[in-house]
Image 1 (cartoon, rainbow, N blue to C red):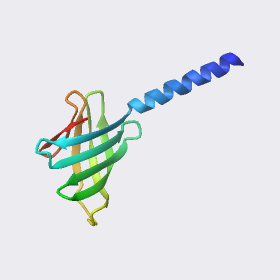
Image 2: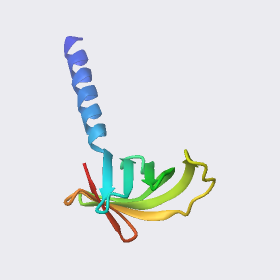
Image 3: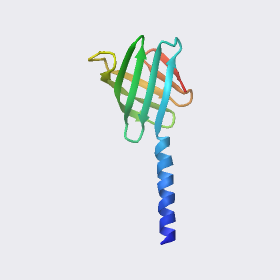
Image 4: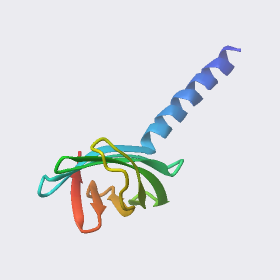
Length: 113
C-alpha cells in the first residue's frame, strides 16, 4: 500500500511539472516600447489568451494554436473583450519563437521576459 501511494504521489508531481512546462506565460514588449503583449499559451490544449496594450487601448484576445513544436508556436488570436470600450477587433496571426524568446505579430517583434 505504501508503494502504491508513493508511486501515485510521484506521478502526480511529475504530471504537474510536465503540465507547467507546456504553459508559456510571458510579457512581451515591442522595440518601440509602445506595444505590450501578455501571452498565456497552452500547447497541450492548443488555446490561451493574449492581452494587448497600445496607446491606452487594453484588449484581450482568445488564442487558437495551429502548430506547436520545440522551436515555435503559431496561431490565431481573435477578439474577446476590451477594458477600454472597444467592441471588436481584427483577428491576427502570431508566432512565438522559443530560441529568441520573441513574440511576432505581423511586422512587430516583441522581446519577452
